[in-house]
Image (cartoon, rainbow, N blue to C red; front, side):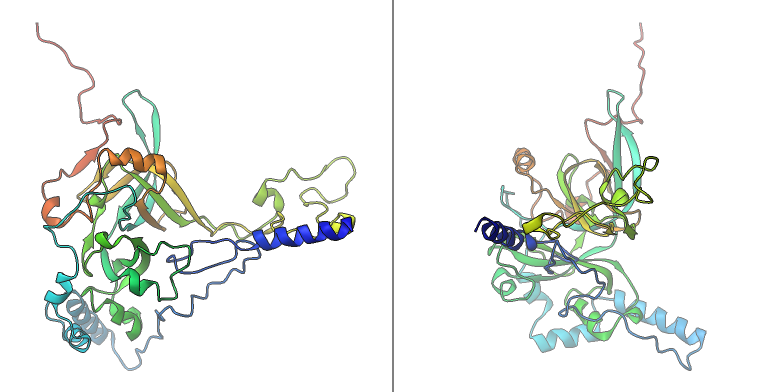
Length: 382
């Protein structure tokens, strides 16, 4: 009887801890944290991105002229015949779209539970900074390049989509942000049609943020580094560095067995895994060899200490996951104590528009950092 109770308790524990949520590519997938099958196959509701190149019988000169003409049509958002046909089929106009969203003259007070959109940045590397006391501060450099709002889905419509999960708040919508414009020749027609409403060139990377209804933005709105401010706290979400298949010593930090006194050639092995008489068997979550890295990781509560508004560069205090030149999702922090601190000086909602960003200086430094442009020694004239 005791053995049966132990088995039932073990099964119950396995069922409770087997599945957990893992924020995947654009916050719409659900994966198993344990027994996770690694695959590069996208979700079935994703639109096919790349197609086979059809350049048979086309010379290099013709291809160059075609690419130049396509770039002109992609960047010309005012007189695009494809976009006009798309809006006509949908029964929309530019005025109708603009009336549904916030304009540059409208803003409201940021609250504790307000969820603004984030941005897609590229990690440039790590660079040290120094505070006024001479202590080194390790910072990660992120650059926000060519970010535009692609689509916004209201909460009532987002709840009916496959990307909505029961644990999401029912008062949030979905806002898709794209980064890095590319040539339409690189993608399929279905993927290119995703950007007709926004009127921008196809983007290389897309991501999705959950936003409050009052923080919605019109498709085509540009997002820059000044969406945040110096001394704000952000969360950075990216994929960690991949290390392929690794053993337990490197993957989990096991000590290993003795290499000089007996044991045989078991120096880097994990040892026994499934003993236990009536409870024999490998438990879910057992630390074993396997693929290391390439998992989504979030560093929360990182402080912005420096910003370059000319090149849209952000200096974040701390280490951001992922290798250099990887995509990083940057958003307002979700830590309670940091959000309470931000309540004393709330950020701009829903974002800082280009009209109000013209008065900003080209470089902003936190009051805690030492500005090397300032004089270090001053002499009083007697």
